[in-house]
Structures are given as C-alpha cells and as structure tokens.
Image (cartoon, rainbow, N blue to C red):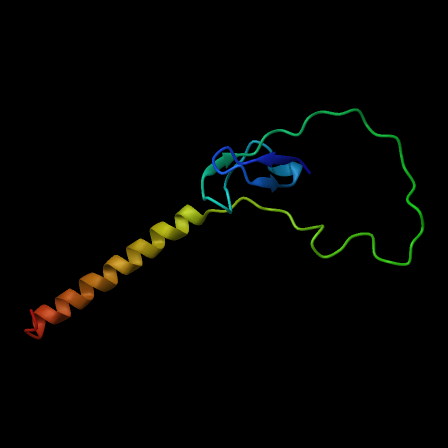
Length: 98
C-alpha cells in the first residue's frame, strides 16, 4: 500500500496499489490527486510472525482510501437545488407574491 503526499495540502494519503495512476479527490482539501505507481521492489524474504493471542490488525489498520466521485455529487446537488428554486419562484409568481 503506497503512502504519498497530496501536492496541494501536503496531507499524507494511503491507498491500495490497485488504484495506481487513478485520479482521486484529496479528502482534506478536495484537490485532484493522481495516485503514483508503487515503487518496484524485490520480493521480500518470507518472515514468520511470532504467535500471539491478539488479532494481527486493529480496525483502523485495514482502512484504505478509495477513489471517489465527489465532484459528480456536487453537480447533482446544484442541479436539484436550482430546480427547487425555479419552482418556488414560479409558485410565487402564480400566486401573486412577486
């Protein structure tokens, strides 16, 4: 999982390597960020973890950012809001309020 920095706000971001070269919106500043390719590294030698009774990862360790389409939601919100305003103005004109 590559960690990289948002070029706009310098927030550190982590995403899965399967999202490399995709564009996401930074969750901090909403700037468009292209996810870099992970550096190619030689395959690591297998390491055996010591046996423990606790789970290997906590609930926050598996959290990854996924690409979002927040910009599409903003456009839809503006469209619906504009239609509502137009309807209110039409009703006001018809009822003689304006």
